[in-house]
Image (cartoon, rainbow, N blue to C red; front, side, top):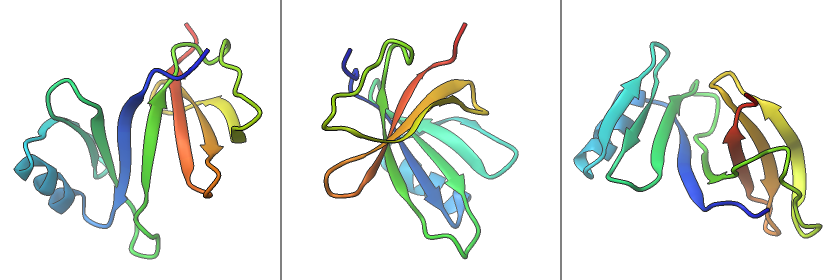
Length: 114
């Protein structure tokens, strides 16, 4: 089983409000905001952008999220370095982290077990 393409872009920021306004100025609409300085924006049918505020002592990061239909059925090719296997998240999905040959981290996201 392969991934199904890009599902989302996950960003951390030092200022949730400023970052959200930046994406809204680019045509994204706020789908929801949490009560802890994070939220999801979308532009049409494309991947969503999820932004989460982090403390000033943490460097802002960008992570691309690839969609996987079934975590249990996914078997990564040996060319894919698995950093963390699929695990349940606090936001209702299962997520795996992989590293590309240049050292970048990617997230693979699958639905939670039903």
